[in-house]
Length: 291
Image (cartoon, rainbow, N blue to C red; front, top):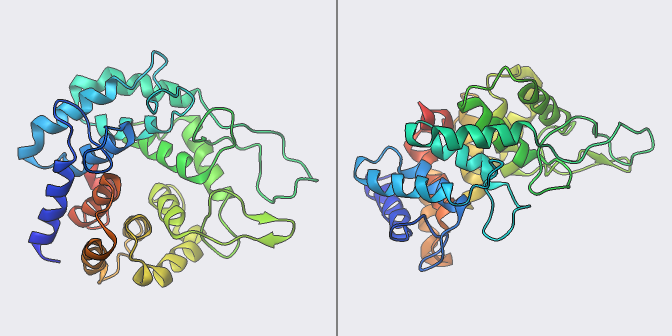
């Protein structure tokens, strides 16, 4: 992939900055906390973008409520940007207090859970706590994985909730490998895995479980990644494989091909551009973002 291609991607992200504010998902849109966090991660290593990054981090604080949650505008129950804000604030001493408040909120929050039941049509253990997208809903793989990433970079790997979250992700792994939104077997039928969710789960689990325990899931991604061209699936597939030292040789070329598809399908959203930029810049190793 040429340097000019990734530079164009970074420039496109920067054009989505709303002056004195955060980032919009699309051109001429209003800023969103989730988009702002992703853009901060993509631009954090760009010295020229320093002032924009700090302005965006400050904007995230305006979406934070007193209990520490970071919400979508006008909806306090939709707190899933909290994990992303923690990642965006990582390394910023000016926002350490805000990050700590967000962490405290995450540690005392979980999805809706119940005792494991023998008559439940699903095979997963409903008693293991994870995290949900919004209040009073079940835990899902993606918000749980993103929360675990946030807790890890902030130094909470030894916390009981972190360890329980790892168990929850492993409990939702499909028998033949991979993950979907969070179910495994329903009425005796094994569900299908998703590329993006599998990538997110594998990114989170690296360093916390044995490779043998996720070998089938890694193999699933290896078999699917070269067919991936959509930015969401491709970005997380590369991070999931990179976390286990299985980044394909064609990985960066695949990013280039995905970015070129904008000529046909239109410009990607800021979050997706940021995901691809991070996969390229850090060679499929998301943890380098926070080094």
